[in-house]
Length: 196
Image (tube, rainbow, N blue to C red; front, side, top):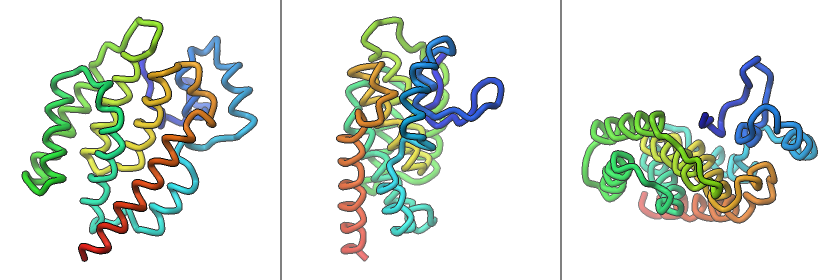
């Protein structure tokens, strides 16, 4: 069963750190021990959240910036995608970011990507690449829907999961991706300020 890294409760309604969702219930004790040391509420770093808040990323006027940032995060892990529907949806998003296509097309593509992600079989392989593809697919859907921070969260999770499924409970494993995401958002904010 593939679970979203943004889910906050388990089947019983208990609060669960999002990185714990990678583990089956009988193995969560190990992940809980790691998570309890850092008490994560989200795998989105505080610095990135602050930058997004200062930039007003959630404002409607920042929709294009959200799309560009979400897509930038996904493009770093695009190689993990295997579903043709998700790849086609991502292409629509890239066209939108270049100024071609409208929001209606983007919304339709987001819906197709989300449907494909929900139906993705995942992987039985030991390397976790198939399961990382599921998270990447959800990230595409989030990016195209303008949920940039959620897309960044999926992207970081998939990047870490693709090289070591056991690393998803180690928040230090996300550091490089989070640092890149923070720098990229700052760069895109600067570009958008220069264009105004």
